[in-house]
Figure 1 (cartoon, rainbow, N blue to C red):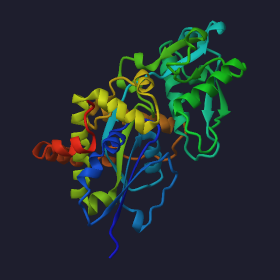
Figure 2 (cartoon, rainbow, N blue to C red; figure 1 turned 90 degrees about the vertical axis):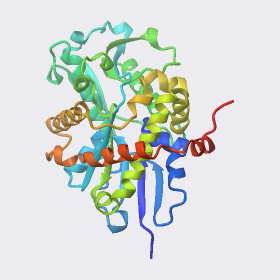
Figure 3 (cartoon, rainbow, N blue to C red; figure 1 turned 30 degrees about the horizontal axis):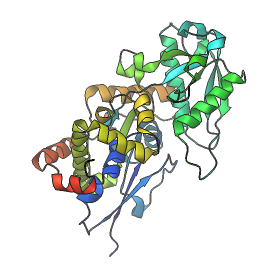
Figure 4 (spheres, one colour; figure 1 turned 180 degrees about the horizontal axis):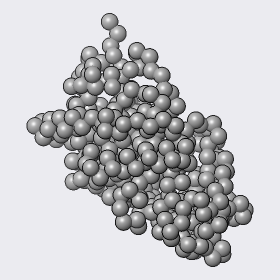
Amino acid sequence: MTRPVIHYTRCPSVPTISALAEAWGTLRAEFAEEHDFDIVFQSVGFSPKTEYDHKDRFWLRNAGHAPAIWKKSHGVDCKVVGLAFLDGRYPVLSLHSSGLAQPEALKGKRLAVFYNPDSPFDLMIAQQLKIYQTTLATAGLGLDDVELVRIPRTFPPRGERQSFLLAGFQSALAALEDGIVDAVAASIPPDGGLYPRLNVVYDTRLAPDLISRVHPSVLRGLVVSTALIEEQRDLLVRIVATLVRTAERAATQPLDALRALATDLGQAPENLAAVYENIAQGIRLDLNDDYVATLDAQKTFLLRQGLIKKDFDLESWIDRSILADATALAQRAPQNAAVFEQTHPQPV
């Protein structure tokens, strides 16, 4: 009889607790002796797949929330079992020579919206629009008060590993310097020496509340197939419990966690730390009311922008019992320290 396969994927571009568990080997160690099923771990980008056959029915994905909302709106049978909110630097930039230095100066100006013409759902459009909306709202403005200029995104040659953030910034800087737009939403590489040439019109991390700060690269979800919950619930709880224990270790070893995530994402640790704030805390799974409120706000935003067409009930999409049971399990059976030491020895 063929063993069931659990397809476990994570985003290749942003820090997640799943990426850290993979980097530290905690999930592989937890399930190394299992023989009743196979877990396939992959770091992959968004897939527009909405139909899952019987052999693919068991899956988990830890990534940005927006693609998961899109899939749910297309009828994919799945549940949110955890959320994580990782604050970071997401500024709106202009050239210093333009004189655009404050959000009120953006009225009537051209704002870049980079898009991927080959994707049925582009989370980067959702991200840019939300960043612009938050920025403009500080001056009593909205998206209707600016000109949104859509620009096809360019990608590094196949096989060339390049930072997702760096590639996006290079395209944004080119659009500014070529005079195509007046402002862009992009993070400045910390080692680029470009600060004197650019104005930070507004940085959304300064917004006072989570709903203003939320966008696809800030709020991430652990989303699983309903079949996995119904047919392999105990296994799922063990997986999430391992993530809970990994988060607890990260809280006590934040620098080690930063280095491990940087290696997994192919970035320098200092660059990762320059973009994101308090990574060890920000990748931790939770389903508190504030996080759920940001997910609800984002669903509403995507609907209003026409990025999803069909609404759905948010509360019924969330399964709080998995994380609750996993947390209880993690507390009853703390991770064996010897396994951690074996999979990830401490530096001398």
